[in-house]
Length: 379
Image (cartoon, rainbow, N blue to C red; front, side, top):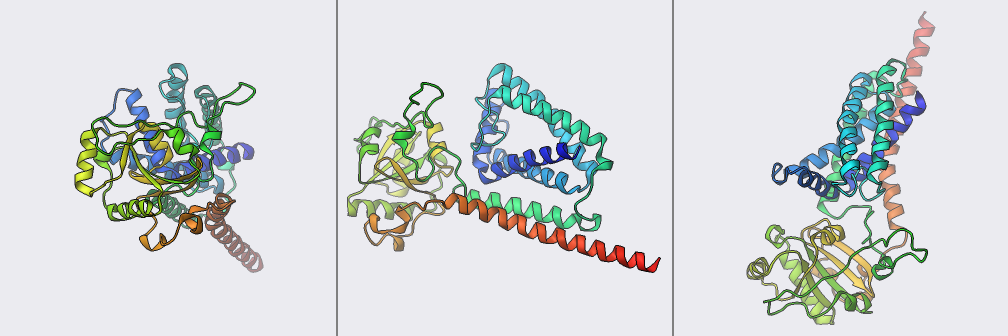
């Protein structure tokens, strides 16, 4: 029973955590589900994003509550209800392939639809067992301290989601992560099994624009110099609050001889409107919407390439300031990815949550031991 409890809690914590790190990715997956069901337009923006954050937070907290034995009846029943909804849903996905993958673990771990259904069947059986044996589950925290764990888990989860919504995901599980060699990631395996990590990186000129892009994707990947790519899946809904900074980066690129392109899935009408609103005089090219959403989660966002290698990525909220762009890129730290940065970030995320949790648990257990000894001495 304890093995079952640990397994279910670990899966829920992992599933919730990777979704909190990439809320927009979960939002896009929810929209895919709605389109597959013929319900696109039912949830207007920003409801899919709210639902994505809420679902991720619920999964994360349920895993923590189950692990610590918090509100055992409510927790186990909620997990059971969760699985009663998602198991039939993943069976439908397995039978129809309406969505390529369920998105249970975001881009961190991609399962086939049949693998996901098998996982959920096992989780459903485990949830039934946990509901029937909840009275035997040992609490790791006293009942009086449960609210501290509960509140801290909710606050931590929301803070993490907001941090990743403000910028890019703090841990990038996508194929276009910093340090990725895009050309190498597009090569097919020598053994002929599997597929490339990146299936598509391409763009094309937009007819009717005076400053349409005049280079191909292969030219950009082969260029040993630096290339700034402004990524804007939809210019119609792109945030224009930081246009002064984007234009300053474009001017900086022009001054030092770097290429600056905007890749978008919008049409020429939307591009001209964007140019009128922002004064943009850089080149534009058309690219696939899904590819753009995979590259960055911000609309717009910025990616820096050199020789086809991703050297940096920023959301529109975290763009380099003009004060940071005072010299050629090769001499600036922002253009040089730091090896092991994701490992350090993962360690930092764990420490910020686990260390206070462990200290609180140890303090609670110490108080419980002292109280027990006092009662024993008085009896």
